[in-house]
Length: 396
Image (cartoon, rainbow, N blue to C red):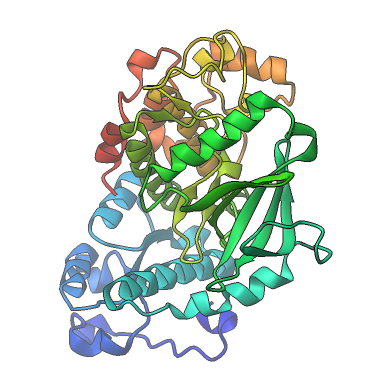
């Protein structure tokens, strides 16, 4: 499968009976595929030995049998992924290895200060995507607008280049119909202030905000890795879903620590940097628990019905546990590859979140049922009480 995906790859087979546990032999390897019982031995012990080597290559553990608890053990031991051989496909293995290699290169770049190789192609790919913008049609002082890469209810999103240093970033520009709406203008400015106050690995970086004639804008980092929604369409392993949930929980812990509730957490609002690290975006509906904002009102249903908490559906005040419910819906979808509630009617979805029964996970995913049940409890007091409690439980 490796040679089929990368014809130039050198895939070397290691005979554990004859060669024993790999030592310094791994120094020139890009990645290791390791059985959980090599030659009848303990693969987790081998993994621990490999991890002791400086700058050790990522290790993907593979097994003939074993459930979710074994998968969690694998990641806690330091494996980059855990794959069942019976379900292995070239695409699944390729994605697993690519993610592992990108993460390793990103960590190495953090230590050395060098640009990772995969970031060198970001600008080229960015210029290929989106709709070209006519020169001068969108003017924001200090920026050169390149392409429109998205459009939503509040405005347009453009790929742009900062003139003084050439940094490529995203300009979120308020739509023409909303520029005279004082409430939306306040929310737009408030979104910038909320995110700008947060510095976290898994929260989008904000560079600037301002008003230029008819174009109120926010300048934020360009996330070239796409959305979680797109990755879910490709398919995720259960372990990848668990790792992503842990990373998102860490981000929410920081967000909640600033007294902010996102209130619209969904796959479209989770994006990836070029190194595949997830990032939370779009705080347009966020609520500052420490503020006295009149921008959101009791009894007014907002956000996306498919991912709303029961208390949001009923128009009740929402705190940080509401975000954990939304994350639970996302986690369910990542695990199963299907929507938690199949209806497309907003009214039906609201009713199902309030009083509907969450479909149980299939038997192969039963090891995650306890986590899902706590995240999706109708009563906020029965959920995880903080994002920190969630990622401490997952411990990945």
